[in-house]
Length: 264
Image 1 (cartoon, rainbow, N blue to C red):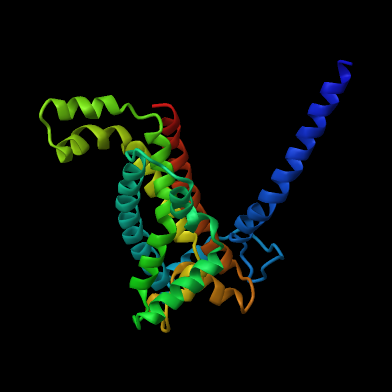
Image 2 (cartoon, one colour):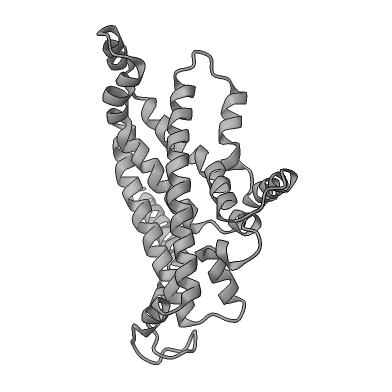
């Protein structure tokens, strides 16, 4: 009987190893081929970092990177502020219904393609010229629910008596928020912001539908998509590796901050 649990553990370990291999071996291959000296996407000809240098001399890639940083920074700032206020508003309500929960989390559940078409139709209905500003608005809509979810996880364990004590001592609602509530939930707010920034950098479908015409609103995911239509090259692998490093770094920082969200 003692051998059966051991065999089960070994089977689960083998299954887990297979899943991780399926997920991460292609990523490892992509990173390795970004250092491939030759121009062939799959044949290794030697180690070189020249493709990373080539990215610095590519004006289209630099322009797309700048657009991505602008969209990511501005949309993250707006989504963080609105998402934090939304989380506070929901958690301080006396009556909470399932309809409100569904409404808040709808952007997380709705498929990206559906949300992208809806936003495109909305902008077209308003006859609003599309560009970076419409991508920013769209990313705010998309990221708002994620920020709110992270902040609400912290508010679930928040000691509201501290804020009530501040109000009883004569502090205004704004002062209580600035001096008491915000410092206590700040790790969750930063974690939500990092998650929103990561999602904004990686997001392609919504940006593609709401960018409009012209290169002035092309983001990095859109640039990678345009380049990959002519074949995968080490330059594309290098660009994808850099985007992945930024995303993983931001997501790791967000997860570290989230450790303090569940257990303050």
